[in-house]
Structures are given as structure tokens and as C-alpha cells.
Image 1 (tube, rainbow, N blue to C red):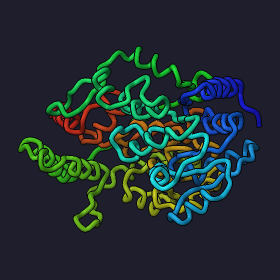
Image 2 (cartoon, helix red, strand yellow):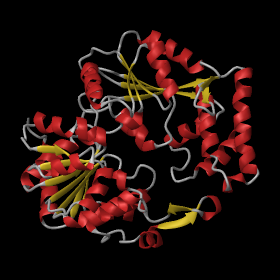
Image 3 (cartoon, rainbow, N blue to C red):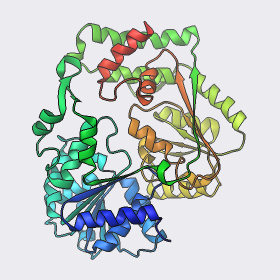
Image 4 (cartoon, helix red, strand yellow):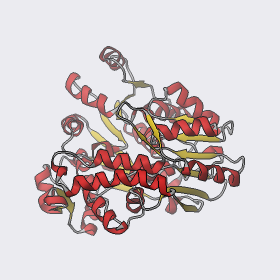
Length: 447
């Protein structure tokens, strides 16, 4: 297989940048071939590589793409017990795959003598203060070249780029400390001034990013199908609404009573989200039923769609259970064994499955589900994170989708906290705003 012209041009620019010193980033929409471009880059650079990626991507993407494109790299997966990790590191490979947590272990336990560092889904290092980020800031200085890959470099705010940018140039463009970055680009805001918000010149920031980043957008390089959003508002009857309202009242009582200092509203917010979805988890983990309104909507949708393949996004294990038991879905979640995961993906893309429900966090990056001909994605509950939302839709809305427009059906319960997630994804409220701010705004909205 040969690279497309835009891929070849990007690789040439990246290699020129890497060989002249410093790092580079390929910021490409899903479907544009980040993996293929990275493999070609490594072929031209030579040497041995540490490649850091989410576990699912390590297990189900890089080896397959290496074989698909015919590069012939020897790839070792550094995962499992310390003994197993060391055994793979002692083997001679072109590429050593490991997770971000594995890289943290690697930085402490191994004297790195590899040439290249590639980080797939570099947003794992967007948090400046996390232990994995601190470890990677030390480790990245051991490599001659550093390449970052992601389609969503700033999932919530331009602030998210600072931690990633350091891995490219050690702070040259955006500051080598959090204090330096904040003094130039941020201000304090949010609840009691506890949140740092971006306040700089967006154009100037993006121009500086562009000095070592290569941005590729699908609409510029691919003939993409239409993406249609179908919002479906669901409703509870008075008895169900009363059960939900009691949880919501408890949430606002905490806020009004100043209990946020002692107890985060997050747990009650999650209870409200569960209730809006039809259930709550009890103290001992048992499921307490409230309603099945969304399941009734799903039944109607499936009757309209017929036997065509449908992909579901679930956020709670109870939704997963319902979809498996009531609608005969195959299922992928965080606990899905890798051999089972690969089998499901193969069956799905071979049109042997027509209904698949997926926990987005378990499959939002790297998994190709577009070959099934699936054009319908149903969100049983919307995620809070725009990155998770965008990346999951991109599992079927990407290059290789040749069956027409993709329709995203978004189920949400009206006049509940589910509207917070919907408004964030629609850009109606700031991604930088805290949960507390969003809850207060929602309360004002619904009265």
C-alpha cells in the first residue's frame, strides 16, 4: 500500500523537522492515517523506538497496521509483570510498545538507550501536574526525536496543550513551568477563583503551536459523508420525575449549604445522571429501577432502522446489561479481554454482527469500526468529555465509510442534568467551566 500525497508531504515535513532537532506533532482527524504516517516516519528515521499508547491501541492497532502496510518492523509489547516487561526489553525489537503507566515504570527502572519516542494519543499527558506527565517530562529528554500523535490536542481548552508541548521542545515555546505558562496565557476564574482559564490571544497561541505541529483535517483531504445529529428528548411520567427530583434536590441542598467544601457534588451529580437514564446504584452496588423510557425509544428506533447495523454508546454498566439482554447486542467495555475484543471487531467489520454496544472510553481511540457499513450510532447517555464524544463518533465517521451519511441519535432526558453534557458538547457552555458552575447555570435554566 502507498501513502496518499498529503500523507507523504506530512511525513517529509515531519522528518525534516525531527532530523534538524526538536520534536514534531501530527494532529490529524481520525481516518487520515496517523499510524501509517508515523510508521513511514520511523522507517525514514531509523533506529529503535519507544511507542507509548493506550492499552487497547497497543494490542489492536500498531501490529496490525505494521503488517497491513508491509513495513516489517519487529514490535514487542512491554506489558504485564515487571519480569515480563524486562524480558521484552531485553529482546531486540525495532519498536517497543507500552502504555503511559508502563512508560512511568520504564522511566524509573530502565536506563533508556532508544532513539525515537512516539506518543500515540498524546492527550494522556495534557495534565501538567500528574505523575505520569512528570515522569514523561524526565524521560523524553533521553530521545533524539520525539513525535506526538493525536486528533484532539486540546479537548477542553488550549491549556491542555502545555503539557504536550513541553515534550516537543522542553518548554521553548510555551514555558518550562506551569507558572510561566499561566502568567502568559491564563487568568484565575471559576468557583472562588480556583480554576485557571485561558485568556490569551487564540490566534497567537495557534500560530506558535503551528511551528512544530502539522494539522490535518478530514474535510480538506477526504470526501467525507454527511454527519447528521438527531436529538431525541425523552420524558418521565410524574412518579418517575418525582424520584429523580429528590436526588436533584439533594444535590442543590449540598451546594446551598456550602457542603461542597466537605463533599464534592460529583457523586450526587452521577446519581442524577443514573436516574435520568432509568436507574441508580444502591449502597451495595445493586441496581434500583426507576424507568425504561430510553429503552422504549431504542425499540422504536430499531424498528425504523430495521436490520441495518447499529452502534450504541453506553456510559453505565446497567445500560450495557440492558442492551445485551434486551436487544441482543455484542458488547465491548473496559473489562473485555483483548482476544474477545479483536474477535468482536472482526465479526463487526465482516457484517456478522448487527448490534454492538461499546463503552466509549474502552474504544474511543484507534479502533476501526467503519467497515461494517454501520451508519447509525445511538448514544444512550452523552459523555461529559468532548474528546470522548468526538473520538467515539469517529469510529464509524471516517475514511472507509462508503455507505452514505452517518446519523448520530442522541438520547437525553429533558429538564435533567443530562442537559449539561449536551450543552457542553454543543458548545453552548464553556468546556473550561467547573462542574459546580455548570450545575448552577443548569439550575437557573430549569428554574
